[in-house]
Length: 144
Length: 141
Image (cartoon, rainbow over all chains, first blue to last red; front, side, top):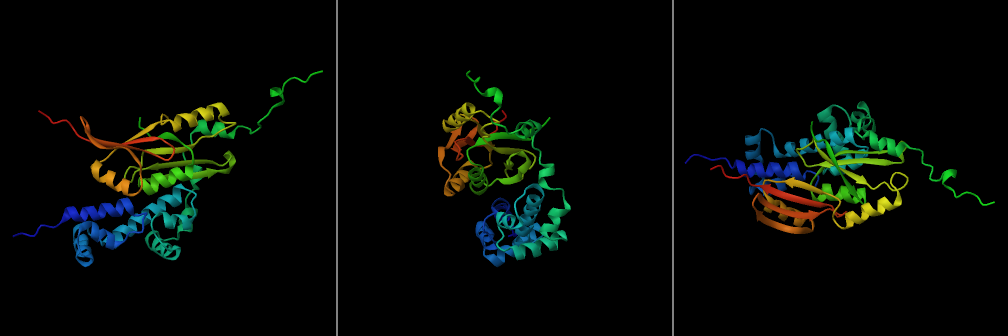
């Protein structure tokens, strides 16, 4: 009988990496989602999707980290945790390997998030108004 | 013309952020605080894979941007659950329901068959209603 790759199970594992990368999941959790042993899963995943599950999960996390560095003012340490990575040191190393610069350098190379956040003009107008809470006009006329 | 963002009032942006990212699994699209605008925080989130449209989690501004009466009215509407709804779709309502329930989301409606598919409902911490629907296309006859 011809071998049928368990692609549906592997896709479930890939979906897990895409949707829950922010949690402390690893290849073991992905293998469990596919219902396969870790070694067998890693082999099948690489054969089906062309890269190891570890790399798939890591690149997903780094892609999210890059977006957060560009579009938020969260600190590098916060972003590291937000994408499910545990240590800033290994985050920096992995990030540099993929993007050719450290997270801080990457952020500095782009305009600050506040410069391109699409805060609507109506809000800017409302919040940029002078913050005086009382004007003399509001006071009741002084009695004489 | 396209929808870019739609806004929801929230009582507490940190609480809303934790709910939408940690429980619902959304991603942060933009999060910037602008000191020159009295620390106004522009915070948007949307589901993974859908980056071109986002929900703005907007703090109720209060005076002087919004007078106290209006602020109280908005808060009252939110408390009653009438301040807005986000309608989500999914490929598998039952599976998402189980996953969200396991993460502590409190459902107001469990998944039920409707003429248009299967859907369920829950609230965010501010009381905003969220519906999650597995849309069933009508059979072509």
